[in-house]
Image (cartoon, rainbow, N blue to C red):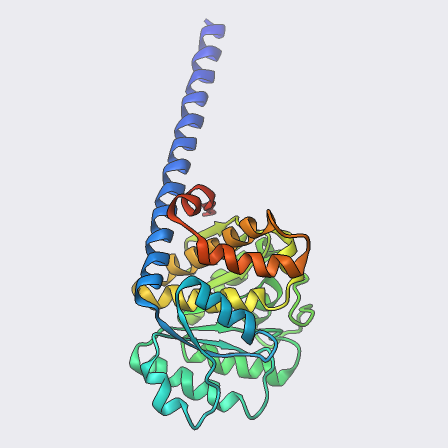
Length: 298
């Protein structure tokens, strides 16, 4: 009797395991279809993405957007913003080379987007490097970005009050999984979707948490890859602003897949940069769906 009971229990566990695998496979397939749909919309609509960003990242950000099918505009001047920003499909603000002169333009553009229901994305680069930078990012968060994207240390610092952080410039001293609770808290308080880049990219709306497991470690050796994926998130949100969570997850996955494909031909960071852009430009439905690796984490 005991042997039969053990056998039945083992069979039941096997059935549950197989069911879980099937359910996970179906969810990944759904994410693959959703991600391809959004990328196709970008290629069809060619949304205009305004980037107020740091000097280092402009080139790769612009090329990333162009390769995905979007139209980049590096418009920084506060004199142009009242005329230009209302016409854009989305705005990307990156505080990498923040200055007293650039901050008013960022705030003005963010305010316009919030008033006109234009989606915008904030990249709080090295948020805890100085009180000026931290205060500036807090001001920008108050203006309700659609998505906040940073590394783990940046998200942990931004979610905290004015406490000290171990953030090391634009680099992260934390793994993305270390920032899950901080990201959820920040999302709940700000009303923004929060994305945390890392070995596993994390996206949360404060309640559900999803992981995008695509990408390669060498992407960290190329400056402005984080900035570029923030701009790509803006492009994805531009074509589906009512589903910013899905758009952020999809953008991270697409960029990660492009990195994986580019790595197959790369010899180092410089050639990976080139092949990543080429891979993003040439990404097709079958390849994307077979590579996308997105899972629910809670």
